Every structure is written in C-alpha cells, then in structure tokens.
Image 1 (cartoon, rainbow, N blue to C red):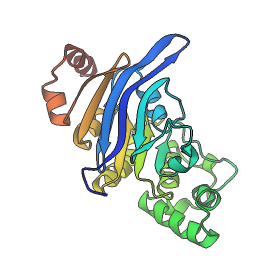
Image 2 (cartoon, helix red, strand yellow; image 1 turned 180 degrees about the vertical axis):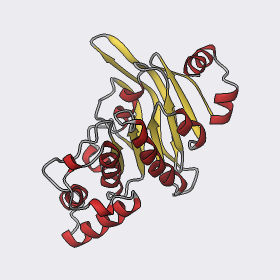
Image 3 (cartoon, rainbow, N blue to C red; image 1 turned 30 degrees about the vertical axis):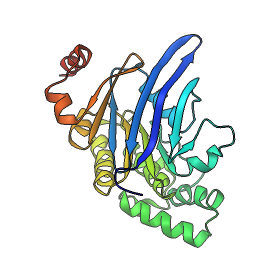
Length: 246
C-alpha cells in the first residue's frame, strides 16, 4: 500500500434523525498515514460522522469506500471490514468481567481466530506499547479513566487495524489523565498509524495532525493543514469558533 493511497473515501454523506439533518453532504478522503483531527462545536455532527465510517450509524445516502470496498453495498461483510478499523470510544467500553489481558485477547481469538498463545503474545506487546503491561491481571473497575482508555487503545491495536477511529477519547477524563492518553496517540501517529480523531484537544489537532477538518452545523466549513487553520482561518465560521475557544 503506497504512502498516498486513499484508505477511506467519503462522498456526499448524509444522515438525518427524525427529519433533522445532522450530516449535510460530507466529502472527505483519508490517505494512508494521515492523522485527521475533526474539530468544531458540540452538536456539529462530528461523532455521527465518525460512527458512520464503520457503520455504527448507517448513513441515509452517499458513498463510503474503505480500501476500494463499498461499505454501503449489502454484499459487503461489514463485520470483516470492522476488524481493519479500530474504534476507541469516549466511555472505554471494556468488558468489566475480564481482566486487562483477557480484554485484549478476546476479539483476537473470537474474530481473528488466533490461538490463545498468539493472542496473548500480541496483547502483551500492545499493552507494553501503551504502558499498561504492569496491569495485565487487573480488572477494569480498579483502573483510572486514563488507564482504561489506554487499555481500550491496546484492545484496538491487537487487531492490527489499517486505521484507528477515536471518538473524543479524552472527554470523559480528568485533566491530569488526558496527557497520558494523548501521549499514546502521539506515539501512534509518529509510528505511521492512520487516524481519524474527533477531539476537543486543540493542541493535539494543531501539533500532531497533518490535517484539521472543522465541522459546523453538519457541514465541513473548512479544512487544511493545522498551522494554516489555526493562524489564518479562511471562513468566518472558523474565525468565530477559534475566537470563542481562545
């Protein structure tokens, strides 16, 4: 797969709830190695868009291609596709009845059909990567929010995804725990992981992403490289958003 290959191609994606239009024709390409930060005010459609990318929400219309495969084609095995798309949620979504290691082994064995030994080896490696290898026998309830989120990231990494989707991964965390999760995400970005991140952490968007996409009222109001966006926003909507934040 070449460096500039398009992994994800989105065209004219639309989604409504009860007649209320939430996504109004979103088009976006994500290339291999991109770190795309999606920012904007709450209620602008960011999380809905992210959840449409792996069909946790089904769009009303539009085109959605992942590695050239049409995700909205009924013949597409979406569960198979999802194994290549890691997803990290706001609320961790760990299995409370399994320890940290088993949380990271379960899907490997069940979905990828890896042996217990192979799954354990990959889980240990991913937990080391996020600095959680010393907590392998701990149950999720004994962990801090930041630790839970790092385990959730490891649980996605063990599936060896082509792309990682992050839905506001730090918004449920105390301020002192945000840094530990962002550090893991920065390391992933440096190692070339393709990422789409819905975030309120503008320092991450500015310093780690190679592209910023600004959502406003269900549309992409502006997109570009982070330095240009934060220093010279082109649209009035982006200027207003940034002036409110600062």
